[in-house]
Length: 221
Image (tube, rainbow, N blue to C red):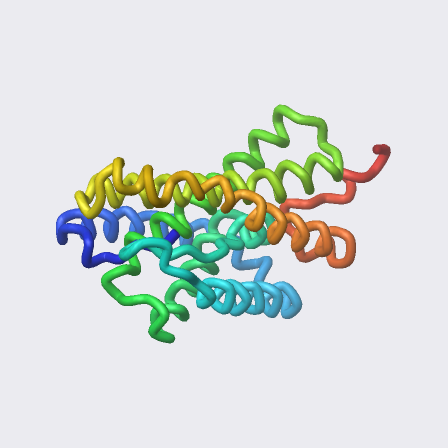
């Protein structure tokens, strides 16, 4: 879910900009640059950024100031990790903004809802699933890809809605009657998109998915 920046105060946008800048700086400091020295990995990363930009260009305005599109960041995060997930998603949002599909005043608030929140949530759930559930191929695909992607989409939508209410653009009553009942419908399309992407990749190109390890998820299972 992307937000229209002009619905919010300048103070809130500045706080969002500071938070996003700090997270982006931290991501740049922690990037495993050595991985991108491989020509294949660099091409896959850039191709994923282009795919994400195209995906985000296909959007629909569900209510004035709130636009919906597929996220796809769960797949990017599972492939490249948190740091490159933040950076790659930022490049995609920058491309969409330069192309005119979104305004510059929307950038930082949208970055918080469609980049920082879903990428971080995907990474946190990956760590939790690894520590709490059996390390099995189907657990990885069904939980880390399908289920996580759906939950991430819901979280992004509800946080964006909360920001609209906090910014006094809408009331809970208005959104509860017109928008919130349809949020559960976001779960399955996002889950299917990311789930199938990761399933195909781990079956055909497992070396492209950095969080997947044959020894961990397949050997002896």
